[in-house]
Length: 365
Figure 1: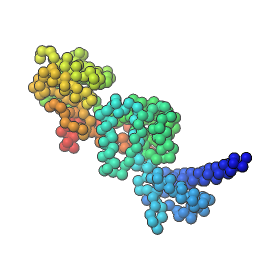
Figure 2 (figure 1 turned 90 degrees about the vertical axis):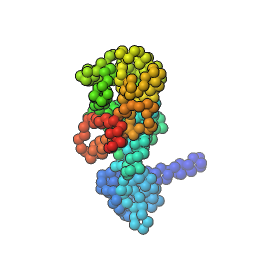
Figure 3 (figure 1 turned 30 degrees about the vertical axis):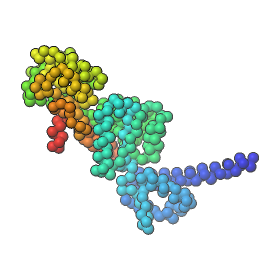
Figure 4 (figure 1 turned 120 degrees about the vertical axis):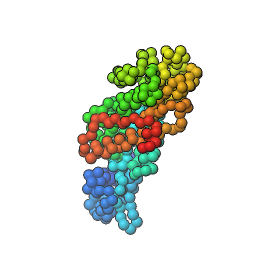
């Protein structure tokens, strides 16, 4: 009996102290979020807060410690406590990755992580990466994301890939006012998206083949199926430029099968085989190069290659080719801009298309 009473007495004050601390945290944070205490503003003195909120100095200090740890405030010796110049609800972004992001979208995801590092070094913006997040709410990453959202430690979310739309409709985000943007998803009024302009990608590649290199027969490989409108654009664009394209030269292929597919497609007499190869995903490029060599062809002589690339490229190409793709830094800037505009209450477009560039164009920009 005595032991139980003692435990209850110990828990009671602890719960009260935690509740009081949370009340102080929420009061100050709410004023910061509402811009009543803007960045750089000095907070009321601790004595004033102690009196107005009716808490002890120890509870107040615990609340200040929490707010400082979260990045909302900082202290200056003998000068007081101030709102951070770059508080997290304005300068801290979350990249949410589904479980297969770093396998299925190897090049883009790795490029995005490098772009985040560059932006963090060049600006005051900060990012948190939440891996393996899907509709299951019991994973550590999901719980960490939920805690950051509840504490208003994020300015917005970048949602990756096809799961973006389903995830946006889970309890995690439904009803949340947090700005969010999707990568490579169809735009919608409540979830704007950023994607590459694939029609321009096709047009620039075909122009290079036909006008720059006088090629006549083009093949296309990709690791996922292009939608019918894009395939029609490819076929019509090739014919409009006087080039031949056949259904047997258009393939959806995974990385392990790329080498044998390219070797087989190119190991036929010259008048019957493609003399131009468009690679729609950089993850296929190395294996395609090996298949091309195995077929006995010489790049720039027997065949020209245009390969997709996320810039800046991580390493040189295995063979002479033109690399065409998108600046990941430009993608990231578009994501951040859309989030910031949503937070300011501005109307944003449902879809932003990033224009493709050849490698030399990226280097000049």
